[in-house]
Amino acid sequence: MSFEQSNAIEFDLSLIHQLTKEDGAHWQPVSVTRFKKANKELFYLNAHHGTGSDFVNKTFLVTRLAFYTLSLKFAVLEYDETQRDQIVTLAREHEKSDFFQASEPIFAAHLAMEKQIPFKGGEPSDRYMFSEMEKHGYSPDDIIGLHFLTAIRQMQRDGSFDEDQLSEYARYIFTQKRQAAGITHGNGMNSLEEFEQWYAAYNTTGKHYSKISDFDVAPVKTTETSYFRDINRALGLIREPHIDTVIEESLSMHDSVLVVYGGGHLTQSRPVFEKAFGPGTVLKLT
Image (cartoon, rainbow, N blue to C red; front, side):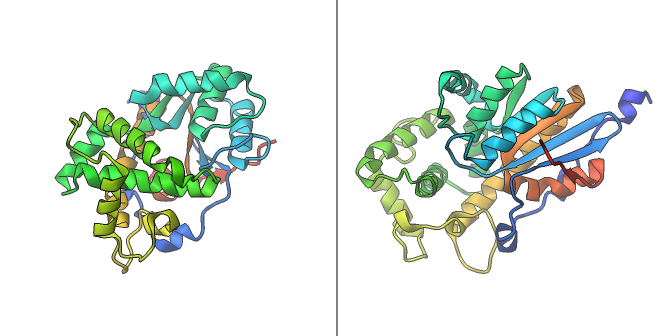
């Protein structure tokens, strides 16, 4: 066995942790955790999703520090590689903006290009996700509906929810998701009215969809019945192994890899990383 082979990082995906309600109550503050074994380093930045200026957004601040203070060879960001052209275009558009208003994958891509660090998306494609979810008994409407429901929750968090524009936004999102997944028109959700019918059929909260909470759509298993959480948990069972496989492959080609992903993913995959590397260390970036 060569020295390079002996230092290869192998992940045991069976160790992926399934999120619980208790996990959601104890998210780690935005930070970078370093995992190291021999010449291999994994830096995991557990992002909090949101938008805003990098001067006021903690995720953006830590992301900037990570790209500018760490010795990085590669980055894995939270997007699907079929969206790469769009991500790169948006990142370049924001290069000249004084007030950075973008999601953290776009901001991270902007910094990676600025620092000339190669990167790729860790997300499975929509085609793959729809195909795999069908094997678990979920329809295109279930996936598209949940996607829109979580988008509504995101708009609630960042203050951009506008009921007057919701119907138009719904048509845009539904068309985009159908096309990305290769679904022909007529199959899969097409309008806000169809979404409202789907939501009413499975909603057990008594809430209007504009009033949902993070927990209502969280990918966690609880004793309380929730079709929306069930769908999201099933999606997670497909997403997380794919994300970790991309990270593992990246580490096989590069000695120093930064991952910028939502904090819940670190909670899920920490057991995988700790078996491969040993315990991680939270870094103080300055």
